[in-house]
Image (cartoon, rainbow, N blue to C red):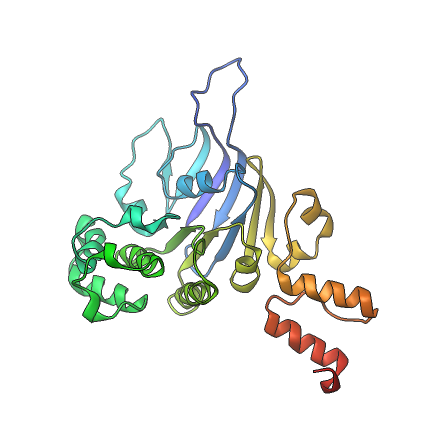
Length: 288
């Protein structure tokens, strides 16, 4: 098990005994494999999603509980070398421009391998850039001359170059147009399916959850209220309602059609294309 959290609590305020403390995360138990996972962490603003991501990357240290990352326990009581953890678990923040600082794209992506004292750092950087779709003729350009979508790709390449097992993305599709969103999700699926990376996405977007993710973790006011397959989540109407979550558009459309036409149809389709095929199966070609 790559990541194992047990009874983890975290507060941004100093924790005082015999006083009411505000914990952003409360008694979190969580296990994440080091490969092949594709997880969405969802919940409303203030639910603790981004805090949890930083706990997983050891940017934050919990107040109590056990955080075991690749066999190393991270705690306030004992100092642990974090460089190896951060090499194995890469974190891409919501605003990628905050992670870019070098004068050229290639130098920026080389920083991770250089920092971790990896050999062949230039080759690793070039491979990572090519993986995210940045062509060699752009390598010597300034990263700050790029579009928002390209900057996001370069930021991802900067993490990929160090070859982490787990990649964490904080709201990766925010600000992208539909094509940019699709291209980014296709890239993450490729990393998951072909390179067996574990992908963790923090998101408000249920379209991202439905089209890409296999497993969903729901946080509400710092408490983990659900952890399971996306099918299980979207079929639990009471849970969706109780925590003010939403359905992807494909399920919304099929729900409405099922109610209006009173037909027996499987509404749990996660893309518009799959929704169309399900309608075609039930209604036949004459309704195209």
